[in-house]
Structure formats: C-alpha cells, structure tokens
Image 1 (tube, helix red, strand yellow):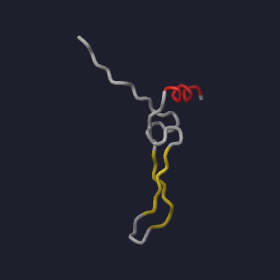
Image 2 (cartoon, rainbow, N blue to C red):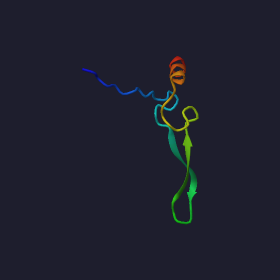
Image 3 (tube, rainbow, N blue to C red):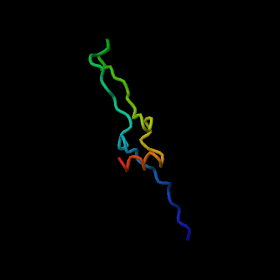
Length: 61
C-alpha cells in the first residue's frame, strides 16, 4: 500500500513559530481602544516557517 506523507514544515529558529506580536504604543484612542502595531519576525516575514537554509543556519548558531 502507498502511504502519503505530508511535507515537513520547518519552524523558524529565530522566532520559534511565533512570528507576529502586537505591541502597544501606549495610550488609547478616542474610542477607548489600545493603540497597537503588529511586529513581524524579520527572518520569516511573519509566516512562522523557514526555508531549509535558514533552519540549518539557526541550528549552528
């Protein structure tokens, strides 16, 4: 029988898969909501996964 395997996804070694974070700017807007910006991991650009070359590089560091 043929077995199907899923392609492996490699977790980004720089952010450990937590690619985006909401950062508060301090203070609130006129509706009472916190003002935030989203910061993305510069290595994986917010995807949480990495290319093979980046995974090998992260393993050495």
